[in-house]
Amino acid sequence: MNKACDVVVVGGGVAGTHTAMSVARFSGGRLSVTLIDRNPSSEFGKKTKTGWSCGDAVSRKSMDFACDNIGISYGYPEIEHQVEGVLVYSPDHESRVLFDGDGYILNRRVWAMRQLEYLVKMGVEVLHRVDVHSVLVEDGFVAGVSGKNLATGEDVKIRAKVVVDASGSASKLRSNLPIKSNIEREIDKENDVIGTGRYIVEFERGEEDETWFDPRYCIIHLDQVLAPGGYSWVFPKGENKANIGLGILKRLLHKRNAKLGINENIQDLIEKYLGMNRVVRNPRPSTSPLDENNIFNIWQVPVRRQNDCLVANGFAIVGDAAWMPRPIDAGGIGPALEASVILGRCIVEALEAGDVSEAGLWKYNVEYVRRRGYQMASFEVLRRYLQGLSNERISFGMKYFLSQEDVESIKRREHPRFPLLTSLKRYLLDSELRRRVREDPGLAKGLRIAAEKSRRLIRLYSEYPENPASFTKWHRRFLAELRDAYKRLSPQEF
Ligand SMILES: Cc1cc2nc3c(=O)[nH]c(=O)nc-3n(C[C@H](O)[C@H](O)[C@H](O)COP(=O)(O)OP(=O)(O)OC[C@H]3O[C@@H](n4cnc5c(N)ncnc54)[C@H](O)[C@@H]3O)c2cc1C
Image (cartoon, rainbow, N blue to C red):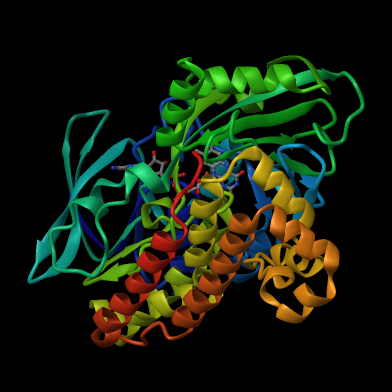
């Protein structure tokens, strides 16, 4: 197959579908858009062979942003359940923080089908069962894609003015990008990729204990022994149904296994977590036809800040391919939805202006950083610091050093500023706080540094360059700040 269009989007996940819809919407249907996904149409948007691997939670705010801008709406059954927020519990279950506000628990399999319906309705051409292996290049610009039809073995070549890589965290296109570009090709797999897995289960209700299951809230448990470097979750899909899983940093799991003299993998840990839950009795795979081929799966999530540059000549990255999930909780659906809307609009503007160079597409970088991206490096620093703490210190910190103001910041999806530790006046006036700081001065200092670094990184993002010419200079300062943060907050006891 040989054809040409204005925009080609690779990947039929949440990022690819909404970018394609956004281009269609903002161009009023004037641009030709082709979306390519490697799955058959009946399994559209499937991440891995074993399913639509996800915790399925998204905030209402992000969903509304995408729906309002693109002019679409979602309802039951793709939205399976509604929640009032996400509750994060300390390892001892004694402290909790509520964040993110109202949200939805999706059925990703059904949601993908709804997205496909919208794509077709909006005039986007969808090619199923095509695996894209590389980009076409012309005069230093990406000029299309090459792939293979997995059903027929036929070679597929599609020329396009802009190529969007929305092919997820294992993107080949980004890592093999053959043109000169500011896009980083590889992620630090040791430190910035979380291995995750989850079950969709039905169960009977055992004991009443809201710290283990509450149909009104998504629950996250921090526990460095059960989920080293990550966390575990129980996201309700009804009164007797939930998405239950966990994520770990492989390096820390190996360390923890060696320390305990055992050899547990992610699946072992999930089974253990299921067994610990006092409310979830007799968990078994969901029998709903809506969950067919989507019961258990394991996959990876990038948890660093988004790629420091998201565009190149004729090329853009979005979603997991651009490392967009929020570093602290691996929530990637919201960032992908918001970035997709922005990217679609910027592509239309660039094509209308006749400039799809890195400079012509640069506005996407600036707008994404202003809307969501500006927080991500500070969350990356906080996440790396917390990963190095023991359960006892996390429980202690959440109990004594997290103020109401911090909780409010977290609710607004912002980095906590730890005013109890950063305000000298408060410190001097509060004898109980001084006693706690003396109990663990290292923790107090670490959180203080994380707060200070957060402010500096957010300030640097506010100076994100308006054009590529100033990028290198800005990037150098930004990386120096990050490196200094890692030096001063190096992992401790894990
Ligand atoms: C276990 C787990 C739990 C999670 N929980 C949550 C959560 O609760 N909330 C949240 O917000 N986020 C969560 N995330 C993250 C979230 O799922 C992702 O951030 C989001 O789905 C990314 O969407 P995407 O479109 O960028 O990529 P993907 O969903 O990976 O989609 C990529 C698509 O491209 C296709 N593709 C890949 N390569 C090619 C190719 N070469 N050619 C053609 N097609 C290709 C794939 O088959 C797929 O259809 C979780 C992730 C995991 C793994």
